[in-house]
Length: 248
Ligand code: SF4
Ligand code: FES
Image (tube, rainbow, N blue to C red; front, side, top):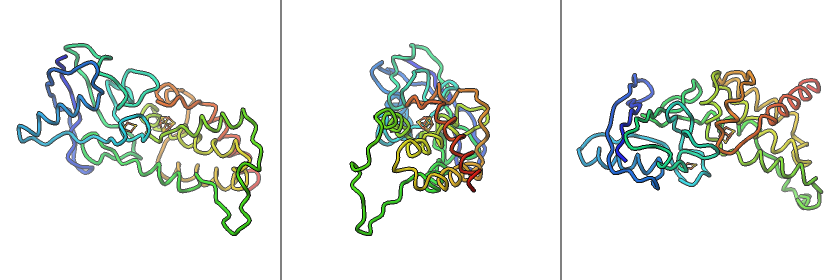
């Protein structure tokens, strides 16, 4: 395949960015989207040009680093896959592909296609954990029975990889799907009840402080999420937040 790429180039957070056109040739259908960008970068480096900066790590759908807006969709046209799992067979010879960073005030551009998603880390740090009592009284995890349906739902919520596609898909740049997944994985388990009140209040407050927008139930986040995180989690977080607010 020969392709025309229209890629967002931006020197740093303070500079103005713009779309720049590139041609790539000989792209195989079995290549991943990131391998296609590797081909482009080899061309650019060979010519002595600045390669396109993009975020990636595991390249197998686990780490959530590969945040690209492809033809206006986070992670591109396929469903339930990350950009690193997107294959070039989803495109046709002669296609023009627009490649931009995830756009949100809380995700400032670092360079080109790479954004700073440390706002997600700060939401996690605000309460996305269970404290462990290491005083010698620690209870064996298996001593507390967990309902199988709750365990399954908690596991589903825990598959969120923190990629940020939900934010990029949302017209309000809301982080509700991400935050609700992180709240839900504990809210569904007995082990998560001890800190439940503080957790949901702290995480939602941090989410607001970071400048993410509100949820208006459009559902674009659920459609674009590579892990199929359900809107049910947002409803659960809202219930948890109400309960915690009434207690507080
Ligand atoms: S909820 Fe889905 S889209 Fe949002 S960060 Fe988690 S995995 Fe990514
Ligand atoms: S590079 Fe890790 S999920 Fe894509």
